[in-house]
Image 1: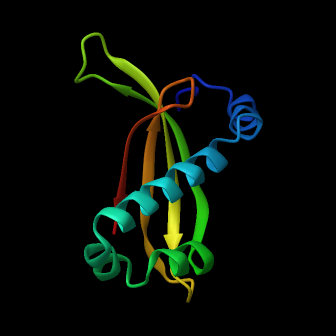
Image 2 (image 1 turned 180 degrees about the vertical axis):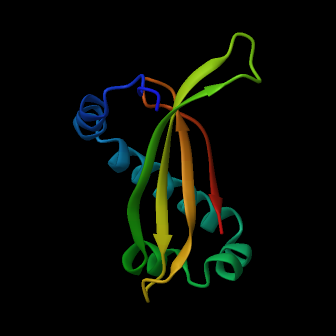
Length: 114
């Protein structure tokens, strides 16, 4: 078994200290709000509820934080990836929101998958 190159306890403290899940939730709400304003019919079809209901009744649960190294760039690019599990009002799994952040916690890109 190989030793992990990151101290997991320090990484967990880093996640909490910098509020990475909270930042991801803020970006998720912004993502949903823009989508709702730009494409309300598609939003309703996909999310099965209007924006206000999604924000008030759906659950956004902490899932994953990882350090990524993307080799498709030259030089390779390091960033954080934060995933939030999306559950509907019945607490059924609905999808996953993933946001890539630079180390200043600015959004690079994000996606909601079902």
